[in-house]
Image 1 (tube, helix red, strand yellow):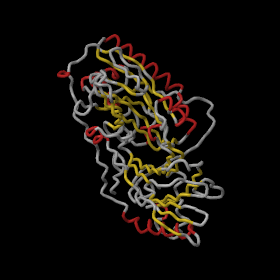
Image 2 (image 1 turned 60 degrees about the vertical axis):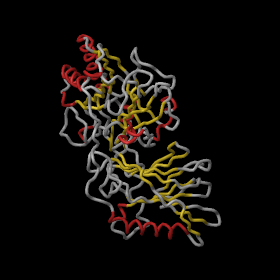
Image 3 (image 1 turned 135 degrees about the vertical axis):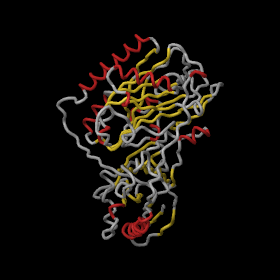
Image 4 (image 1 turned 90 degrees about the vertical axis):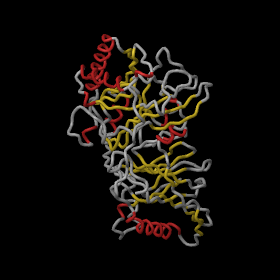
Length: 464
């Protein structure tokens, strides 16, 4: 719910709340000087493994193999990857992508970016190496990027094809199966539309000493994707998301030169449509847990009253500006079925948006408040991000900036630790729990709340 509080000096206080948003975070951010690169040995190991794999493939003669690379990028490098807005990224979450060149027979459009592909259904894209270093979360997601017509016209979809592969679901070589054991772990991910290609990859990686039980499948279904390498074929793309690295120095070394390789395997003899072992459209996991946060509504109402009382001052005229904090109904399966834009949705996260409907001028400030879904046990991570003209400006998260931020408004409430209340101002001098931003007067900003992973293997249920 959003309110505008006006003083004669034109101070605006916009208050947002969303009872339906959830998270759980355990982030230990530390920065140290490293004497040695901890990934040097891993890079050498997987370089050797991949060279052996490529040699075996070439000797067998059934597939041609082309190697690409995994690259991580930030807001600053998004223009290089073809997006001025960084695909609506979380400013605290580095994104990784796969870059690999086209095969000889592939049509290339002059609008194609370096991270999108046209892909035959019998091909396989193989990711092999080490998962990201310890963090709150990582996820590998594949997308239908653009839907092309034979006349060259296209529509941007950016819809997820299946649930993301995350620490709750990924298969790795070693470890005890726990969430924590899935980081810095050996894994193989195979994206294909042909189960025969998937089986072949399992056999190939077994030959170089990686058990097939470490292999993960990213499905392409010919029932909702027009796969192929012609001008009218759909394009696909990929993202790796990482949230809250525990050691930022080690994470930087990982991302600068990831011990992670990407290979494109193309059958030497093209399989016709009838001989392809097709996959059905993936069935998504449910996020319902049977619990909800309704017990927090009285605390939320008390928090709202306390904020108005403590921050409003004398002579405030309170008017409601935008009372709607909306769930972003971004579901990849629906976007693919209906040719709708999905803005690179992620099934591991639930998204909520609030548009204040006004800019942030010199003497203005926003107060954003709501349930801390990490502390209530509904999520592993929650972030509150400010978007300025489509680009993320800054973010607070449940690991540091949100925790304890509502105590000053709810000193005696038993659920005070399960709420947050932060300010967004031009000047945060001597103000705790305050996000300081530059001039936003040219744009109408947006506030985005993300909640990653619940007790299920995907993001929280917004209705809970």
